[in-house]
Length: 260
Image 1 (spheres, rainbow, N blue to C red):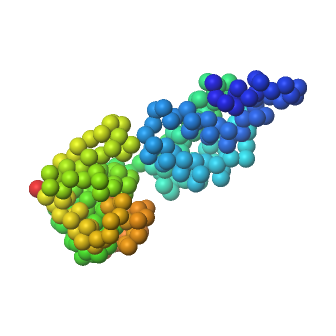
Image 2: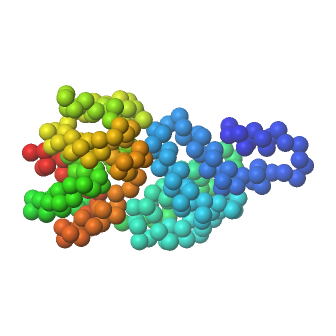
């Protein structure tokens, strides 16, 4: 039973109810604590970012019992220009409110039955388009975001896995990337073989940043990991004259073509 519920039943206040105590911030805290046993640390970090950036600013001042279907539909509608994110928020709220019902904090899940937005399907590049994009990456030999995107494409790894990779995970002589369990999708250590091109990317990064940094992709001359590559990604798409292609698509469709 969540700590908040324990506090309620231990309280002697005559007029206090669990509904009064259970704010959305309370639900978020208990949800994160509950999920620590089931989710990877990196996934929890992504959840917390979604919570802080979107959910709490919209719903954080309300009590759990007061959240209505209309509240969630309004938030979902506000995010309609980014359908994947909108649907992710909807799914996330659905899971949280399912737990709130299980914990007897409210009756009914207000997120059930709200229609999701259709999402963009994977965009496939033909060889000419892929060559155009790769040429743009290669035309920025001193841009670490370009190298990070190359490495992502060549390994099929997640963006978060690439940006949080540390040098001690790599054996360049053997051509192996050992992902720790905290990064791996299966929550266990994985040994990923690297292609020659992927190794070349890492060697280029080492030359750019000869300092003994922890992270592979850092802000130059600093030991701070490169947190975002979307700005360069947008620039690269414009220069390559490509539309509707996402970093997620790059991860899924390019590794086999580029390694050949």
